[in-house]
Every structure is written in C-alpha cells, then in structure tokens.
Length: 358
View 1: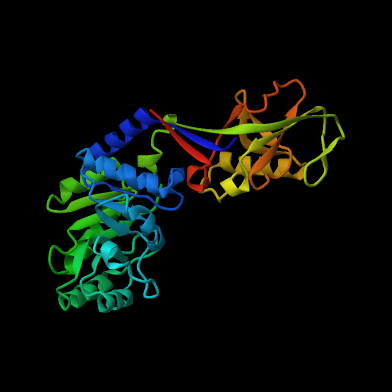
View 2 (view 1 turned 90 degrees about the vertical axis):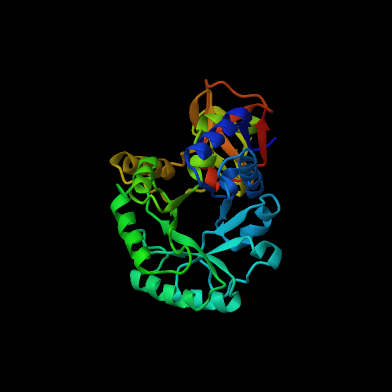
C-alpha cells in the first residue's frame, strides 16, 4: 500500500560495475535523497564496489550533515562537495580524518588551517558555471599560504563544470595551467576532481596530461544510468464511481463527466506533484509548459500515474500521502490493491519502500 521503487538487482549491480570499471578513480556521489535509494544504501553499494576490486577510494556527499548517514557504511575517504565555511563545525575526529574538505575561498582556507592545521582539502577553481571557486590569483595566494602549513594535505584541484554547454576540454586545459602556476606544495594540484565531463573528454584530457590523475565524480549516470532496471509503482487504495456533477475531494470539485475517482498512494510528502524548474529550453518543452497551463485553467492536470499505458489526470491537487485521479467512463478500472506505474524524478522523490529483487 505504498509508493515503491523496485530494482532489478542483477541488472542494476551489473550496471554499477560496468560504470566503475570504465571510470578508474571514480568518486561515487551520494547526496540529497540518495537519488531515491537513500544515502545509506548508496554508501553500502559504494563499499560493495570497492570490495569487488574496483578503483573506488572516495565517496562524495553533498553536505557535512550527510556524513553521519554514510560514514558507518563506507570505510574509505569522504569528500564533501559543498565548500567549507567558517560556521560549519568540523567533523568529530574519528570521521574527520577521513574527510576531504572542498575550499573555494582564500579566507576560508585561512580559517580552516587555523581550526585544523592537518586538514585534508581540495582547492576549487571557479569554472564557467560560476557557482563556487577561486580565481587564478587566489590559487597562487593559496599556494603561498599552504607552504606555511606543512601539516595540511592538499588532495588536488576541484572543477565543477556546467551541463550541456558543449566541449569542456579547452576550459579544463586552461584551468589546469592556472593550477600548475599556483605552485601548491606536495603533489599539489595534479589530481583533478571533475564533474560533468564526458567519457571522450576524460580520455582526451588523460592523453594530454599523462602526469595528472583525473577523478570523475559521478552520481546520476552511476545510480540512475540504467532506467530499465528501475520501476516505480503506486497502490490503488480506493475506487469510487462518479456521475457528471458529483462532488469529490477536499475542495468539492465536480466530475466533468461520468467515470471513476481513484485514490492512489503517493503525494506531496513523496514529491508527487512537486515540480522543479526545467533546464530544457526547446520549443517542445515550452509548448508542453503552455499545454500544462491550459489544463490548469480548466482543472485538468496530467499526473505522473499511468494506467494501461495512458497517463491519467489528477482529479485535484495531490494530498500529502495520496492522490486522486480521474478515470473517464469506458476505461478499465483497476482493482483496489492493484499497482499502477508512476513516472517520477528520482532526485526529488522519497519512496515508502525500495525493493531490490535478486
């Protein structure tokens, strides 16, 4: 009686191993809702990949608050992707020695080294994404500062690149040149932690910079890369026949024509009906937005629930843990207890159950 993610275990694990084998030095990313799987499960799967002999030495999390959930399930290093700030408490020592901080501002580097002279860290360089990162001159100043703190361990250079903006090779090459000029002590910035490079770009850069190590940080294409291994279903909780004009729901809406109102599991608490802005700027995407707006105006909104291969309409906005669908007369009416398909955005959905078959 729940919103359930069912995983084809052998197929999913085979995909994880294939991605890990194709990306030496991979840094699995487990953040947010754990891509729908939960953070703890992803941490265990990262450990499983390492135990299977794959080159997985570091697990990345999004924030410091996520560390406790993964630290006991993953035994290697822990990279925090959100840059450290002075108001963030340092992790307790048992976990802290495994943590690699991301530092994106010179002032924060000074504060971190004051708080922990033995800190492990990566220096983030500003990219064309313009979210976090140091300018070239700041990298040079960071190198000077780090030479005064020989106890600190610089684990490399962090680059967070934009999605869908064409090739990144020339930009990465320029940023690496800046990093070399910074003259950071020790191995310095010859390990490059990167996000959103294609396999072809990684191959090209490894060929150009044979004395550098590239560590690809991968989340979506690792955990969600084989959608055929994943199936989301909701349970039909109740079925009510309605005639045209019959009232139903919290807001006493009326049925536009004869049919059935279905009560199905899954609501706003799960992320159903909550929509993040899309990055798709195509004419097709804009037309779809206009169409949804027209449906809103007349009280019909397409839901993510499908019955017999057809996406059905919400009868009213989703409730917290259940949703009402309108099924017009003539359609097959599911039985109470039957499961129906749901199309979701995994990174914005919380499932009641995650079932791994096999």
